[in-house]
Figure 1 (cartoon, rainbow, N blue to C red):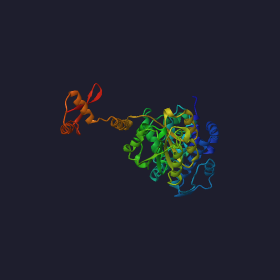
Figure 2: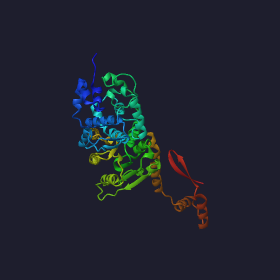
Figure 3: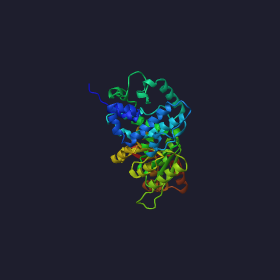
Figure 4: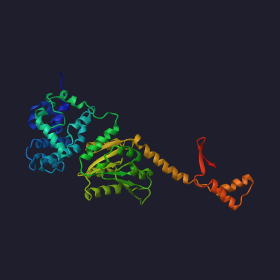
Length: 412
């Protein structure tokens, strides 16, 4: 029987199977050699190996300062605190893995369920000490069931070496925790995991390049208690619905109007970048969920390497090139779309506009009365006119009816 080793070989490299084992397994060595020149794959391998070291470390503290793995990470610009409490080190590694695993999607065939692949690297509840202790307990008690004793997220049981070949690992990758058509649940899972990987998260919105109704639909699934605030940076000619958004979320909303010096050039993008810099360096915000669908912010997310970004993009406004660039550089994004949850905001926005429009159609009851008296060929004294106006035109006396699809007024 012909056996395939592509998936298992690549996973073995990324999960941190030791070099000595890889060198003895020819198929595994072949794919390891191909990934050795891939920056993102090397980073994930180093993080996986460091996590394996920590999980097997029996002391409460660990010093990784002299580790070549840490030196490699720093060479690639990954900030890593190499000394401290062992459990806290595992949390740090889990956080970095959750961010750095994303660009490795390009390594695997497109037909593979990427969410299932990624899940292998994510420790359940791994951003908290309790989750680390639970995972460590399971790992140590069942170490012989983990392939080559490297950690991965699965329920250990005696089914053989998962990384022996593709036939062994594929059953673990064939599951789908999210139904393929449930896009909202996919966004919820992505946002939840992004927030868990950081300390302080805010939402920043370029109102000129975002749709308030699609954002409302996305916000419906956001963990409101874990997001500090929403900053809405709005130009002079964007959608009025942005001012209503605060009524549809428990997250504090700060509306920031941005005036232009030149009608042909908006300053929203410049103010947004400045706001993010201030939030990061002054307010110690480390995680940003950015609603903006153009490439103007590529410079921001690609140069603030110590900050974490999750971009919420609109499919029809986002180029394929931008998505490819984000994926190659390991920057997370989700595509948001219209949903039923946005209907209430749409209705309120339309009602607000209609109220403003209807106020423009004013009726002068005295002038209307004079025209009616002329057509009736009669007159009323000033006192009688006031009595008539009070009787038929005072508050609540002028009724509206619908006739042939049009709004009409009814007196009396």
